[in-house]
Image 1 (cartoon, one colour):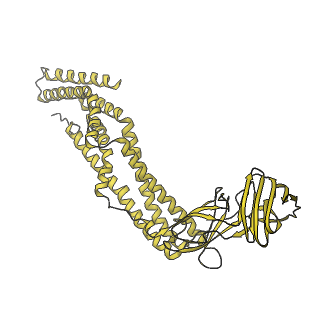
Image 2 (image 1 turned 90 degrees about the vertical axis):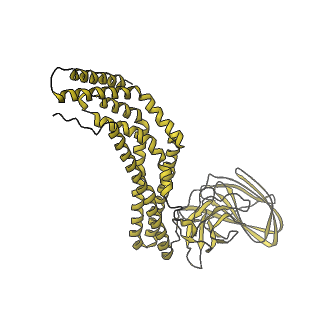
Image 3 (image 1 turned 135 degrees about the vertical axis):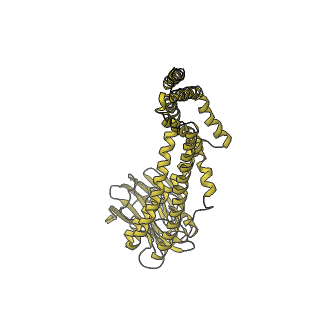
Length: 445
């Protein structure tokens, strides 16, 4: 590094000037004293220049001896950042739910929770910034410190000693922060999952094929649904914190709406927590925007599904059954045949959730029937439906109290403890800089 030769030259200059002053015939005691100090400074700065590589390796050796490392420290910071970001997003999601439910009076308390989490997140950002500077610029900070330390007449000795001390103390000390925080943290932060759970799963048809974008509704009693979700393209859905506050053990009746039809899944009763598959026993989604709903007592004995073709072997166990063919308006049904005979289907149109849908009915007699459908279509878009969240004011107050306690714990663990540790590192750096001579002042009498 070009800085080190310059620092070594300055140390030689400092020593030479000190020797010149010390050997000066001037009978002034202060001049002799100044010469001795400059000779000492020149020797000290030359030793620091020569020990530059040793000082860098000393930090690595100390970290290894203490069982710490920078990669593990960065992982620790990353995990804490993820916790805070998740908590902050949860608070924002809950705020949206409260606005939709009309419980605006609780938003002020939620804003306080969010401010505590944001303060903790800011502290983590500052630690990130300090860590990046120390880790990436440590060698340059040390070199510049040695250079300033070597300037004659102690012009930059104080700043140089401080930079040398900072590069050593912070490089070794920062990776030890997780151990310091662990020693003073509470054993366990409050957990919201101890009181609330979730309901999540996947909606499939009679053939265990995923039903795209189903509207899943949960009911506590008759009337309007308590909570509603629109599933994804693979039929997956989720109800749970922070958007939905569902106490553990709470029971809900489930309903699935697809292409305008209200369908009862199996199982129909869900208890928190629940994860599984909702099977629609009277629905077959053929793909490409075509679905079939079975009405009546019948048995699906065999099937063959391929792109643009459906072949079903059905045994009607009652006096008759009906197949409801549902398709998106752009889907073209080329041919429908029952037991080898072509059937003309009278299509009727209706609009549902922003989708133009057409349907027709095919009557089947008792006994075995073979149904063949040839069609062409392209996908099933998401219906225009808004999610409805389950928010109970009493549960929200308890949940906010837990969040507030958790946010206060974050403030202590993620802000106060790291700040105290940084103060300890700063004090240690100051003490080391004083030891190196950065705090001494030259007085000329």
